[in-house]
Length: 268
Length: 262
Ligand SMILES: Nc1ncnc2c1ncn2[C@@H]1O[C@H](COP(=O)(O)OP(=O)(O)OP(=O)(O)O)[C@@H](O)[C@H]1O
Ligand SMILES: [Mg+2]
Image (cartoon, rainbow over all chains, first blue to last red; front, side, top):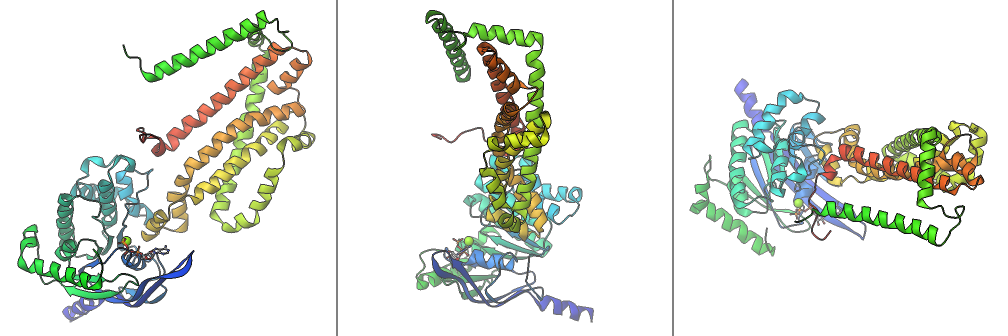
């Protein structure tokens, strides 16, 4: 009996979006349709990536899921409940690092802990361990203006993980990083996801990165932003960098690239 | 052989001062300028020494200094609190703020006599006049500062389930502090003016009172000595505000390396 219930919970999607629309009013008059009729589901424990050309509404989608942006119409549920605000069990990484300049690195990482009135002392070791993981062990006492852009972004990633959220929403988290660091961070993220059974939705500009990380890749079209394709990535896990050279991996990348070309989008 | 640039600049400005004072002294002697028009620096120095030695300047200094500080604290404090209220409640901005601006357009010099009648010839009226002058720069800068927060910062706080109050306390308020200090810096310098204006209108003590008295006696050197003290008071208070600012708004000052060409 117990197994049956567990399976049922497993099967219920963590996020379900149906007919999602977002229209921004603009000062110049003509409203911008950022999202049009977006529907998808995100299963518990799944790793989904989103690719699409610049300005197609990826950040908009993530902000709606994070509960900080109101949708114009449509339905989204998180764990079966309509999203009408942010949730404590979600970790968000923005496209820009958005660190508070008067807090040092460790204090910035502990921001969600402070906001959610959790025990700072109890979470500090975890914060330090995460900082070490992203290669910032010696920087806990530094202030944001003493860090490079890539370092700031890594602080932002650490901050999203510190309260151990079940769902991670990441908007181009590795955009500001060099290729080597980026690969290392990809592997770390996969490790954390695998160990802690989190659900991840990650926006990226890099098609290889999207394929490397994902169970499924959601492909979006330029304005108005729509989901034009969802590609199941059937590559074995755990994955390592050698997979990038495999024929299967290359085929997925080529397929997505071809898809973009057919849409007339220059790059993604 | 190389002298540090800062040292050189200091040396140059001291030299400039010495040349200026000597030139002034020479001009007074050679051109036989009457002392009741422009006093020679030596006469000012003598007046300064006499005033300090007799304690006259010291007593009046403390009166004015206390008026400046008290007026500044009350005025700036009220400006900050009201600025926070206006920043917190948009309704306040639409209902109360227009009246505040209307009050600000009144020249404080014009209402100083009324305040002296209401609060008397003692220190109270000077404190009130100073406070009305110190109030507005802090208020205006606090309001602007509280609005200056980047949208993304609010979004981030909210995404981590911050309440309105938490967003205010943890992001908007610290974000506003550099602006508040700009207001405080303006206010402290204006406070000195406020206290002197108050003393001019009607008083029994203070450096402004002493200026009027010495002016009446055609003691120009004595007046100049007071002006120097007032200027030193202003500089000292300005530096004090800056010192506090560097400690409180440390994240703004710590980028010591300037942008090239900036
Ligand atoms: N606050 C806003 N007001 C008006 N229009 C907006 C606003 N935010 C975004 N837009 C518009 O909505 C569209 C989608 O923006 P969004 O930031 O979601 O794109 P994106 O896919 O994240 O792009 P990028 O890859 O460059 O980050 C864009 O055309 C943009 O101009
Ligand atoms: Mg974006």
